[in-house]
Image (tube, rainbow over all chains, first blue to last red; front, side, top):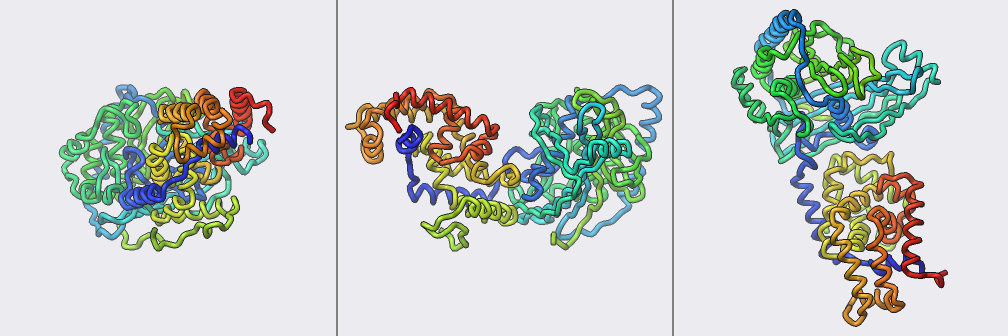
Amino acid sequence: MNELQMISEMLDETPAEQTAAQGRRRLLSEIANPRPAAPARRRFPLPRWSPGLGLAGLAGVAAASVAVAVAVSGTTSPAPQSPGQTATGELSARTILVAAAEQAESTTETTGKYWHTATIDRHSFRVGKGDGAYTVVWRQRSEGWTPSTPGGKQYGRQQDLGATPATPADTAAWRRAGSPATFSVSVPVGPGSKVRKPLKLKTQPGSPHLSGSPLVDRDKVFWLGRNVTVKDLRALPADPAKLKASLLKWYRGHGTESSGQAMTSDAWLFEVTRGLIVDMPVTPKVRGAAFRMLADLDTVKAIGPVRDGEGRTGTAVATTERTPNGVLEHRLIIDQRRGTALGTQIVVVRPAGANAALPAGATLVSTSVMAGGWTDTGPR
Amino acid sequence: MTAQARTAAHPGEPVTATARQEQDAADLTRSLRDPEHFTAIYDRHFTAVYRYVAGRLGPQVADDLAAETFLVAFRKREAFDPRRGALRPWLFGIATNLVAQHKRDETRRYKALARAGAEPSSTAGHEDRVVRLVAAEGMQPRLARALASLSQAERDVVLLVALSGFAHDEVAQALDIPYGTVGSRLSRARKKLRAALDLEVLP
């Protein structure tokens, strides 16, 4: 008998039948009434749908998409603007947002069994070394079905659309590198974390994966400073000042992803409101009020016409954030004709830190809203 | 138990490692849509997880922590990545993290075993058997003390191998450490254990 066998003999314990049965009951009660693994902080309450098994290398869109954005966002402070820019910028940001509000307020809607959204996320990564380095863009499609009544399940469908070189110059560099079919990159293990874990991207798209999970506390569907139900969202005030006050009740002086990051109330409000406008089933009147509320924020400036990740044209407003990883612009792209969000972008205005290798003006992360509306049809 | 279909093999029927891995992966995937299906994973792995946790922390703490391991795994199941290894090492990685939060209980257990081995007459039941097997040769106190003197990282490797029969690659996955580190850590720890036991006569 060697020392390992001796240890095994000495420490041997067998579970009593009742111990196994008791543990099983605990598991079943957890299944019936799941608790989120961590406090819900994101736009979506936890557990948020995340990629199914096949997509698991991405270890959670959630992890990757939020983490990339957040890792580059350190502490928040509005960047100084030149006086001229402020005057004209404020004016046109207000014009853009008030026009969007009017458009939103004039629309009507019919609710259904599910609030359905579809988005395409894009992330930029720098791969390779030195002169041979190039940028690849990884795209991922996410669809979500949120039940309008409590007790049901939230469904998500995720598909890895593959990673490709960002520009013709990047394509040339990629070819010189032998046109690799996979890229090794790294993403932070959690929001704001300095610890990074490897992530393997492929040029080939993956297949879609559907997953579903019971709602947090049976009825919480989104995160809006706190976990909220569909009923909460439908009951938000349609008056801009009251909406602002009701949201700011949940502002605690720090960022939306980590309590370790300070964030000004304006930046926080912009972040939370952007989530409300882009993702959530609020009434058209409340969406209008949200646009009007942003119109009143001095730190929101106009960017003007931009193309989103999918090549569609919209009008952008933005806030600027100074971080250890450069000056970042958080953009909300608006579809002026419909009074809805076309998407969001984070652009590196002045690269530094983790983003030092990216050119100024590079889009770090973007989300394009492909669909958002009520449906009676669940996932198929 | 429930009337739910069980995916585990019939008692006594051997399950190959590959078959088990496939079942695990299939059950986990099903549990994403149908959470109750996670009980199949519980049924297949509870005893092994219990033996590991109870071996390190004793039955009292293990009654709670072995079950807790599955609750944590259930909550984190969407983050499980089959491309980074099988479910079993992932599960034992979670168990090891929980064990790490109970270092005092672990040390207390080894000290108790050291005392028990030194006074065979005061022990009963299960420990009698231990006494016959190990302490009769006067080794249990030394072995238990040697275990207590290992670093946490060394114990993680030694006990995954000794209590759960993990291969090196499974240990690497469970602890998220490089494959080479498993071998070096294990041989360093075994050297210490052998020195404590003064085992020159062993095969």
